[in-house]
Length: 465
Image 1 (cartoon, rainbow, N blue to C red):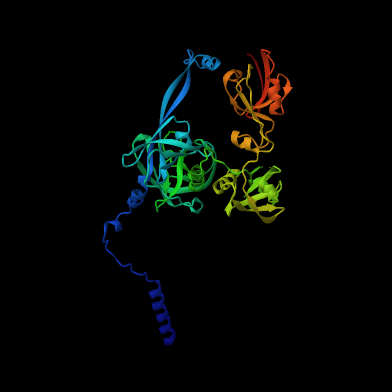
Image 2: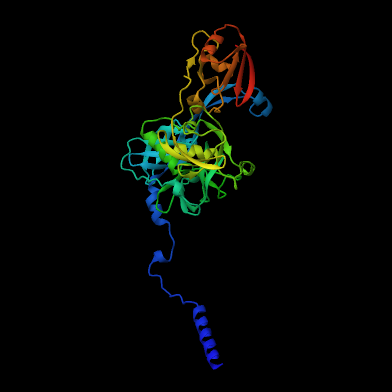
């Protein structure tokens, strides 16, 4: 009993010694940096490469005597004198090359007639647009006479994780350069329309306001994570939901601008599809929604060349998960034409892998572009036969075919036709080729009927010229 009692006491002492908390050693801070968390070093490194942009746009506005009456103003919207008006916009940009290459948003500078760029240190430069792409909402500028400028390095945006600290640097409300802090709130935000762009974005809660567009989203190493482009708001101010274009796509656009391109050339997918939701996942026998299911493939599609067929589900592209068509396009655009991406896809419940070689949209069939000339009521009308390249340029659906209006000038401007209209018939003559347009418009009749597809809607236009 004594032995047992002694053993129990020993166990209690051991238990108490194990359960006793370790005492934290008290250390007195020895420097200011140990007392205060500061973003100052990051700001000092990144801020000089973020610029303020002032853009001037000349807009042709029609002065109507019915401007105060919504009904008659709409009814007589094509009447009245057209006068040019100057509009000014402001935004931000990021220097990405010491020789003065600057990235900003398309909606800031895309239509500008004059662009003035002011650096953080007060220096000013005039700028020219080298490349502008509305779909990605990106534009690349060249500062005139610039050299040895501070530039931001690119971060691999595929490595960015939710929760990372980031800083948004820009020129909100024209106040001058301003820094706000936050975190990466979300990845792979496939939003139908943000700013001028559509597609794939990073989300942040760092305060972004009007004027921040085109500014930098940087990480704690001072590297460019993305280009701030838009916010979701009801009041017009920041609600903590901002979007940035990922740096990998920005880098691809910059590379093409350096190569002399004036338009951003995207690889062509040649497929239609949709994201797999809960209903589709159940029908496909998946344990959770994931991937993009293919509905159709063009015979020349690089995915078809890789052996894929309708009904396959793309799970990842280039080693990154893809859960929406926008993500597929983003991965391809960031990689660029000529690259090869590994695709993992699902067919009949079996995972497969293939290599997809990214190609430019093919010019097949030939576009056979035609512009109507001579003494003709449709003089100035430019049309082209629809092929994958024309679909990409005119932002047409992959299923579109026939002949599309590419430009409207001179007398043709009176017809009401617009670029992007698909011609179905002119004067009751079916339009299948651009030669059909040239023949159908030769008549000297004054009353015309033109059948078109506009925005997916069939429209019959009747007019007298």
